[in-house]
Length: 199
Image 1 (cartoon, rainbow, N blue to C red):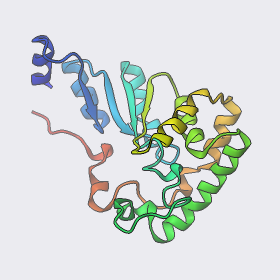
Image 2: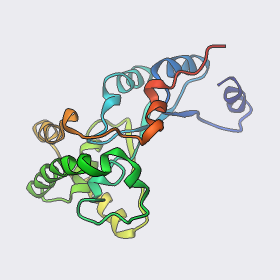
Image 3: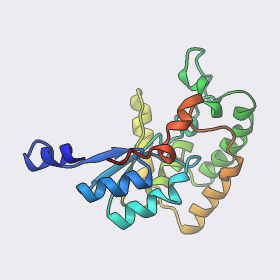
């Protein structure tokens, strides 16, 4: 952080952002130089940051750049509406294989039913929910297809009430999401375990 602060002072960079820091690391880093944004996984089925990270970011005035806002493609239909290619890396993620996937299909079905109710697609509903979580959250859905970009952009027009948002959350109870969000040993390196060493 000290070196990044020097780069700001030299005019070589303008802002500093971090990816998946623990709350302790974030607090310590922010004391050295204000953090502008955090890149964190955040989606309908990955909401763990709501308990600790999000309140701390709001207290410190830090924005959230939400990666995998469609649950690594799950709410885009990967492995549900589309057949997953044999060489897909998603097959290595616990939520996308075996019994976990079969259980998670029920969640997709509930969200799909709500999307029909709102006259939108499942990705639009998932992104619309995220966009309604606050002006300090910016989702970054990745895609390789123009049709998906156009579809995703449709989420900007979605108007959801507090009742709608609760109904969407209730359709994806976190205790019913089957499987860890990360594969294998990587689950030990998420933000909850990302304390940087003290000097």
